Each structure stands twice: as C-alpha cells, then as structure tokens.
Amino acid sequence: METWKKSFASLWVAELLAIIGFSTSNPMIPLYLKELGVSDPAALNGWTGAINASSSLALAIFAPIWGALADSYGKKPMLMRAMFGGSVAMGLLALTTSPWQVLALKTLQGCITGTIAAATVLTATIVPQAEVGYRLGLLHMAVFMGNSLGPMFGGVVTDLAGSRTNFLATAILLLLAGIIVTREVIESGMPKPKSGSLLRNAVPDIRVLRSTPGLSGVMVVIFVVQFANAVVGPLIPLVVMDMKAGSGGLGSLSGLLIGVASLAGALGAVITGKTSAKLGYSKALLVCLGGAFLFYVPQGFADRPWQLLILRAFSGFFLGGTMPTANALIALRSKREKQGAVYGLSTSISNAGGALGPAYGAVAASTLGYPAVFFTTSLLLGVMALAVALREKRELGSRE
View 1 (cartoon, one colour):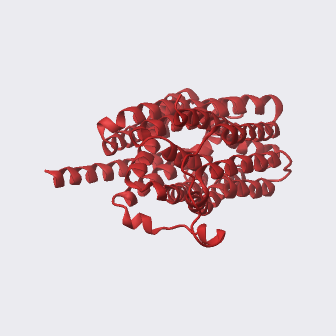
View 2 (spheres, rainbow, N blue to C red):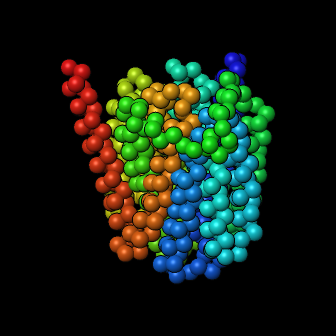
C-alpha cells in the first residue's frame, strides 16, 4: 500500500473514533442539564443554547490561529493537539456539578479542539490532487458515521448508566484517536516555520480570501449551512421530549433520531465525493442544498417521532454532501502552502454559524415554538440554493 493511502486510512479511523467520542456525549447535554437540576423549559433551552454556542464561538476564534500554525509547524501536530486536548476537556466534564461548569469546560473544548478542520487540511495535504474530492468525501463519511454511531451509543449509555459515563467514554476514544495519528499518520514535506516568533506565526492571513477567486462565496455557503444545521441539532432531544410528553426512553430515541440523520449524511458525503468531480462541484452543491431544503420544510409539521425520523434521514443525506463539496472547492482553489490558513478561516466561519445557530434556535423555540426552528432552517437552505443557482447561471453565461 502506498504511504499516503496508509496514512489516510489511519487518519480515517482516528477521525471516526474522535467523532464517535464527541457525539456520544454532546447531544445528551440537555438531558445532563436536567440531571443537574435544570427543569424549567425556558432555562433548559437557554443553557443548551449557551453551551453549544460558547463551544462553537471559541472554536471560531481559535481555528484561524491553529490553521496559521499548521502552515508553519505542520498539520499533523495540530490534529494531535485537537485530539489529546479534547480528551482532557471531555474527561473533566464527568466531574461537573453545575451548568456553569459545563459551560466553562465546553468553552475550553472549543478553544483546543477542532478535529474535523485539522483532519480536513491534513487530508488535503497528504492525498494527490486528483483524489482530493473523493478522499474528502470519505473523510466526511467518517464524520457522519461517527455522528450516527455516537448518539445511538450515548443514548443507551445515558439511559443505563447516566450522562457522566458518556464523558469518560469520549475521553478514552479521543485518546485512542490521538495515539493512532501519532503512530501511523505520515505528513510528507513538513513545512519550515516562517521567520519570527510563535506568536507572529499564529496570526491568521485573511488576505487569502480576497486574493483567491471564488473563495468568499464558498465561505458564505459554509456559514449558512452550518448556521441552519446548528439551529435544529441541539434541540432534537427537546423536540422528542415535547412529542413524547414525558414518556421514557428519551435518550435512546433522541440518539436514534440524531444517529439516523448522520448515517444518511455519511452516505450522502461519500456518494457526493465520488460523483461531484464529474458533475461539477457547484452543481453538486446546488443539488445538495435543494434536496435539504425540500426535506426540511415538512419537519415543521411533524408531530410523531417516526415522521421526524424519516424526514431527517432524507435531509441528512443531502446535507451530508454539502461540506465535502465545499471543502473540495477550497482545496482546488487555494495554494497548498496556504491551505492551513484557508481551512482555519473556513472553520472559523463555520463555527460562527454553529455558534449563532443554537442561540437563535433557543430563542425561536422559547418564543415561537419548535416548528419555527425547522421553518427557519428550510428558508435559509432555500435562499442559499437559489444563490448558488444564480451564480452557476452567471458563470455558464460568461463561458458561452
């Protein structure tokens, strides 16, 4: 087996373990908050939104810094930092006794993690250019598979052993993932640090957005997709709780809903990664956004968990294809020696959307009800699909 293929295979397994770990515990945060004594629905929505938003906001702030350091000191060390640092932060969550402690540690997690971004830029570095779309699709398949398996496993663990056990499981899985990357992944052509101090090398170069044609548009797509997705995701356990009206098995059912959507997303990611180069990345992105829009609209009318399960499976499939397509566009349009900075900025923009989404979702759910959350998501995805379609039409007209 070629060296880069072996490295990618190891990277794929490590990222799968990391995402399983994170998604074992993260979706169960609302249920954990109830164990800590937060019973008022408005307070539960507020704490859930604040905790998810703080983690995403911290990651948005620090991602460009880690990306800049990756260009100077290597992509592999940044992935190791994210996995080992995440292991420590998630393990400490098992010791928390109040919501503010959860908030503080989730914020710390956002500052020091970011495994998806680190794995994405490392993949774009180690694989041949002709393989980048397909391999990024496979990587995102691992992400979605992890997000599928983790919640289902975490839901069962929550019902049987409590939420604290989830945090310990996450810490162990992240530790194993970091060890695999350390031992098995080879990054060829390690960069030489730029002249100057570590602090100077950590300053992100935002000029790359202006100097690279079409890059800003891709960043807008990434922001909107992550914002729309983050509006709904953290509230799924609360939506299920509202539908079930106090029935048992909420953790398992919530995990199943989240897991099925992620499993469908894994399938969408690998199929899109395989076909997008032939179809054209912009057209593939348009199809994914349009399909997600069509299946998000009826979720606002669902009043049974099985209805929501089917609709989220289809919407998850189409959303699964958006990020590998967008990341492939970034890899093809940016210089390799600047990809750490570019992916750092894309992660920052993505997590800005991820930070604003839960905050808005909490407000919308408390004031307008859960259906409004789904309708907002579908509206944003529809507008973004229209914008991509208009841009594709303009580019086609300019080539004729």
